[in-house]
Length: 104
Image (cartoon, rainbow, N blue to C red):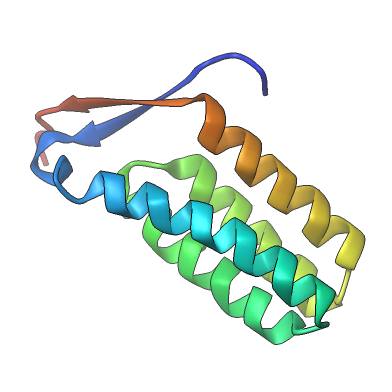
């Protein structure tokens, strides 16, 4: 994932999105720390949280990766967790947010 990825986000969320993204950067650091200290249950909870919140903000890739992180943690697969965490970090470097009015 080296090309720019567009995330279409409801313009009503414009004030909340920067903090949401910053929190995901913090999650990357936490996941690395949890891997180092073998706190796999914490990673499972973070993955579950990402899975639940990503789509609500318009970041469907975060939802997907969060779900995969949750499942990898359930299996205790540290290599997969590390790989998914790197994919999340990469995604955050290439995602471009486009705000638009959404009709629900």
